[in-house]
Amino acid sequence: MGECVFCDIVAGRAPASIIYEDSDVVAFMTLRPIAPGECLVIPKVHVDHFTDLGDRLAARMMVVAQHLGRRVREVFKPKRVGFVVHGFGIPHAHLIVVPQHGPHDITSGRFARVEDGKVVFSHRDMPIADRTVLDEHARLLRVDELTSP
Image (tube, rainbow, N blue to C red; front, side, top):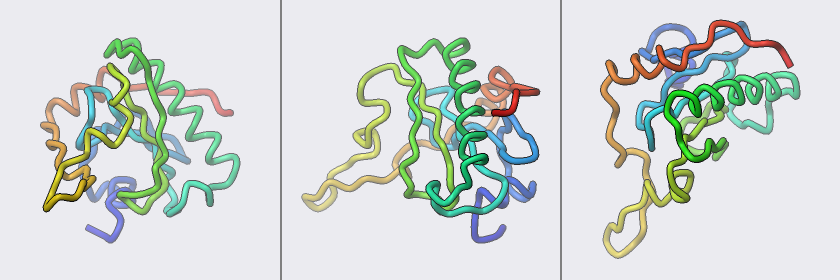
């Protein structure tokens, strides 16, 4: 494993439940989902900050996320689908597709805990989903081809 787990996923050195892949991006299920169907779209090239992506690649990521958001709505029936680029966590640009069943599904409230009188936010408190479940969700959401922006 290298320094960037997303680069390892792109290179096939780390496991992932892949939903979609083309020459520019790869989409896969989130390891610690807030709700079933949560997934990520990442560029295949390592770019730390989303704002450093070229316009064409950023647009491609959004188009893929849009298609996946539609699939999430069809398959998992959330009230809404949100898109998040928060910039922390893994230092590799990524766009998160979040099924929203309630107003707090896209906020950091799910990641919050009180520790020594302070509110601490960490995705590490979210349980890791079972790989067989992630693989099944990926199968349900899988998209073979998408049109280019």
